[in-house]
Each structure stands twice: as C-alpha cells, then as structure tokens.
Amino acid sequence: MVAYPLHLQTFTLEVTMKINQLSELLHPGWKGNLLALFAGAILTLAFAPFFIFPLAILSPALLLALWLYLTPKQAFLRGWLFGLGLFGTGVYWVFISIHTYGNASVFLAGFITCAFIAILALFPACLGYLLNRYFPYPKETKLIFAFSAIWILFEWVRSWIFTGFPWLLLGDSQIYSPLKGYAPIMSVYGVSLAVLISSGLLVNGLLKARKHDYRNMTINFFLIGTIWALGYGLSFLHWTKPKGPPIQVSLIQGNIEQELKWSYDHLALTLDLYRKLTRENWDSKLIIWPENAIPLSLQNAMEFVDDIGKEAKNNKATLITGIPIQNGAENNYFNAVIAIGHDYNFYLKQKLVPFGEYTPFADYLTKIMDHFNIPMSSMVPSNQKTKPLFAQGLEIATFICYEIAFTELVRLQNDSVGILLTVSNDAWFGHSIASSQHMAMAQMRAIELARPVLFVSNTGITSIIRPNGTIQSAIPPFQTAVLTDKVQAMTGRTLWQQRGMDPLLLMMITFLIISFKSQRKTKKKRAKNYGRTVQPTKN
Image (cartoon, rainbow, N blue to C red):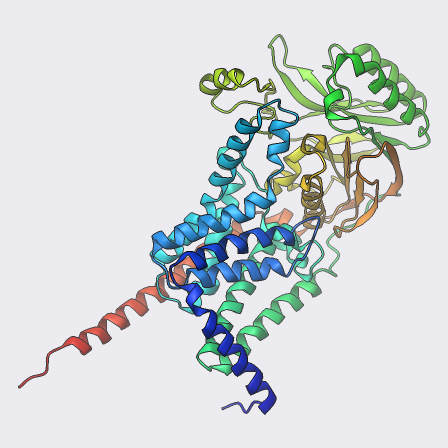
C-alpha cells in the first residue's frame, strides 16, 4: 500500500465527490447530450487562431466519459451532437464562401452549410457507435487503445473519402505544444494519437479515483506526463540539415478583394499592382505571387507573362505565380503555378475543392445549382505525378490552396526538395478563422518534413514558416504588402518521410486486436460469473 499525505487524500476525496455528483450527466438524457454539443464546440478553441491546446485533451476525454454508459445508438446520437458542435464552430466559414462570394441566397447557403456540417458530424457519431457496439465494457484497453485507434482511423478516412476533407485533425491543434515532437515520426496522425491516448488515460485515471484506487490513478497521470515529456524531448531532434546558402525571397500579398479578383474591368489594375510591387523587389532572386494572381488563362495572358518573364530573366530572378491553364481545346482549366524568368516550369493542382473548383456528380447537380444561380468552376485535376518546381537551383515542392492540408500528398519521397511552397486565395472565406486554420496546417507540414514553408496568400496570412513550425516572418492579413526575407533550404529525411502511414496503421490494427481480446475475455468472465450466480442450489 502507498501512503499518501493527508492533504493529498483530502483533495482526492473532494475530486471524487465532484465526479460522483457529475456522474448523472454520463447516463442517457438531454443534459449529457447538451454537454456533448458543448464539448465539440469548445474543441475549436484548441485550433488556430486560438491554440488553447489543452482543450484537445479535455474535450475528447469528456466525450469518452459521456459515452461510457450508453447503448451504441445513444452513443451515435451523442457523438453526432459532438460533431455538430465541433464542425459548426470550426468550419462555419463555408457559409461565407457560398453566400457572399458564391451568390447563393441565405437560405440555400445555410442549407448547404448545415448539410455539410451534419455529414462531417457523422464521423464522431460512427466512432461512438462502433466503440460501444464492439467494446461495450469500460476496460483500460477500450479507453486508451480502442478509442484512440478508431478516432485515428476515422481521421485518416476523412482525409481521402469523397476527395477528402482533412480539416480540424486533432494533431493540428498541437503546433505550439510539446506533442508536436511526434510529427516528424508519425505525421499529424501521430500527434493526434498522443492527444487521444492522453485523453483515454485521463478518463481512466478519474475512474480509478472514483473507485479510490489512487495507486492506478497515479500511474495513469504519470503516463500522461511521460507522453508529453517524450514529445517535448523529440521536438529538439534535428532531422534535416541546411542545403546551400540561404536565398532571399519576396512574397507578394496583393490583397485583391474577391468581388474584384475576376472582374475584367479590374484586370489592368490587378496586373499593374503586381508588376509594380515586383519591380521594387528585383534584388530578391525568388519572387512569388499567390494563387491565380493572374486572373486570366495562360493562353490569354501570354503577352503579359512574356514581358514580366523577360524582366525577371534580365534581373537573374525567378517569378512564381498562380494562373489558370486551359486544358487543350476543352472548355475547362487546370489550376496551375508557373515559374518564369531565370527558370521555366509549372505545377498543376491535383486536389480540387468540391463545389468551389469542380462539381461532384456534375451530371446530376449542375442543373440544380444553376437553378439557384451558384457559379460553378470548370477546373479539372491533374493526373500527372507530383514534381517539384526548379528555381534558382532549388527544388521546391509546390501545392495550391488546401492541398497543403493533405499530409500524404505533401509527404516527400526524397530529400532533394529543400523548400515547401503553397499559394492560396483565402479571400473566399472573408474575415473568418479559415486562413489561420489553413496556415496552421502548413505549419504542421513544416514540422513533419523539417523544412521551411513559404505560405503566399492573396489576402493573407502570407508568411515564412521555419522547419520547426514557428513563424519566421509574416504580413498581417488584408494588407497590400511584400514580405522579403532569407530562407534556408534543408536536406534530409524525417522518419515520417521514410516510413509513411503503414507503421501507424499497423499500430492501430494492433490496438484494436488487443482491445477485442480484452473485451472477449471480460465477456467470458462475466458470463461465467453470471452462470454461477443464477445456478439453482441443490436440495
């Protein structure tokens, strides 16, 4: 027996009493359902721009506790309400894109946004159902292993099903926490795993406290501290090393309002602005404009592109810009990035935004959308293998807009790429939290690959991100400005680059197998004990 000081025993008893008082919320009922909705809503505060990262531990822990004494169907409902809270507060900005800039009515934009949120909420709903359906007994393996494994698998599935939407992954909330040290080893999903195991240990520890099992309670809390301490230690490892001398870059934030960006009447002003800001920075060897900075197809903008390309070449500089490229004779376009001047090459976008750049099930939905006057883009994805841009002797892995959110797409297969680049136009989402969330995912890609990221956006936040995920320099949003700084390319490979997703998936399968066996053992034991209890006595 471990002898605890009197004051510690008193404090623990008080905590236990509070837990018992709140236990009624863990059972079926509207109070627990409302608390699940609240738990999902506050989880958004763990992400950018708030970064209250401990909430990423507390919110899932609260949800797990709220699932303990429910049937699978009841857990499904409570999980769905949690999802409504999370995605309702976390991706509400979809409404701005559809209504303000998509010309949809308030009613239609609200309907589409609510439907989108309701569908995303099905992921935590299904998590609750599966957890309580196949792991009904509140064993340690359920709370720590099964809960974590199913959540991670659902995050992974959400990143690719129906083209994928890897937004609000738990790991993205830990950019400034010690747990980010796991990212170069197992990516953002590995960080999510560390968060979820911490949540499971927290719930398990409180359950032990409720039973006055203070020894096991202490072990659970010690393991949480160990996970965080290990993550902190890992964050000091250097996975890459400098490659050549630093290069001076200028990132141009045009701050063109979305209402004017594609206006033909404003075209000349847009091109003159970018030309003027560029001519003031020819001392930089690499100048970058944001996504679709040139709001014309390359075929129609060749005269302007040739002129600015000659200027860049005369100054021994490379200009990189976003621009649409017409797909041959077809009436559709590639969303592209081109490098001109000292170097000439291009990149074509692979991951398109549903309902923004293309219409899913176009044969069925286009006429319906036209009826509501929603303008649909005619972009097509590239089928070519991702190739880096070559500029100023550097290989630059380039991504457009929300492609940077896809960790498996961004994962580099070799160490020759020195810098990551993403160009975007977050003006679609107005003065919302979307741009901060977007940049946070770019920060996570920097940590995963231990390379700097150049994040160039039309309205901001334009920034240079260090290999450890911190911001080296940035321009405030909604300002017309140029960010000039030196960037150090890196070489080398993180463990995530080398191994990819397979080790983590294997670990999740192992967790589930261990949990299944534990549940089966508990079931047999309870059945045996139940049989002894009901067995009639002999006369």
